[in-house]
Amino acid sequence: MTTVTNASAPVHAERAYHQALSQLRSIEDMVERLRCREGCDGEDDAREEIIEDPLSVETHTTYEIILSWGGPAVRIVGDLDQYNQPATAELQYQDWYTPWTNYPLKDAETDVLMTYASEFCFA
Image (cartoon, rainbow, N blue to C red):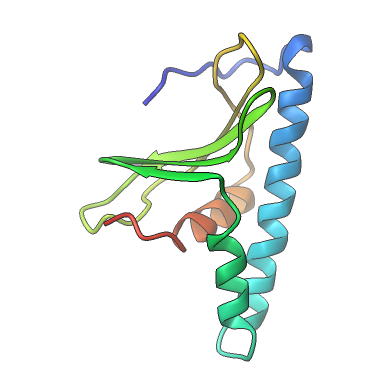
């Protein structure tokens, strides 16, 4: 995986930070709809909304889900377990000419990203 910095969002990367926040809020909304519809009508629609959301999904022993690119860009990265399921999830952002930076996630936000990432097939 790409080396990232954990520094506070620098001024020149502020819009990338806000793009990451926007993507995170969108993912939270999609996961909330999925959780509310589990076992009910509309569950397939909620899963399809998640599957169709990212621009790209890449895997190796790690995975990468591209949510937006250019400036600013946002992605979810993490490690896969022995069953090719997400074991970790980090939200990262960058703007032109800046390194990938970890978005500071709360535990509940990490849980939401894990649920979102688990909807993809990494086999």
